[in-house]
Amino acid sequence: MESYEILESTGVATRDMFENLLPSSERRAKGPYIVMECYEEIPCNPCVTSCKFGAVQMEELNKCPHVDYEKCVGCANCVSHCPGLACFMINETVGDGKIDITFPYELKPVPAKGDIVNALDRKGAVVGKAEIVRVLSGPRMDHTNVITMRVDQELIYDARNISLE
Ligand code: SF4
Ligand code: SF4
Image (cartoon, rainbow, N blue to C red; front, side):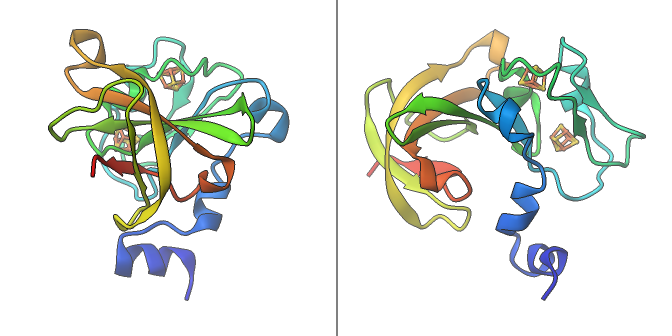
């Protein structure tokens, strides 16, 4: 089955769809970068308007966003402004076989820095442990909690959310 057919029937993007979005290995080695897992063409563009660095382009409102990775500074502003919860920031420069994944979190209670939680995959299954290393919230984040979890490097595709138990 083709990747997009799998997405349509399961709601879960395949690994190759995710990998096709990634910047060059040189850019990945420089620091945090955004990945916009926005695979379907929908009339939406807060990712464009919320980026103060002009790093997100869209041919027209019904197209998928395109990121200019030379301009993306990894500020996470788009993570909180995306209504589709489709923007994730990844930092592969952490070291010790770990990476940081930043994601929007709309559940309660909100975890605190230092908490050890379960990392969940795209279907909600536990795939490992995560350490919470940053929690952003408030007006600057459009009142959406933006959480950064530290996980094993191999979870770069899988880890997309957390559970606190
Ligand atoms: S992380 Fe910041 S700089 Fe990068 S695309 Fe999002 S808003 Fe723009
Ligand atoms: S704001 Fe989010 S859902 Fe809307 S087009 Fe951008 S990435 Fe997709």
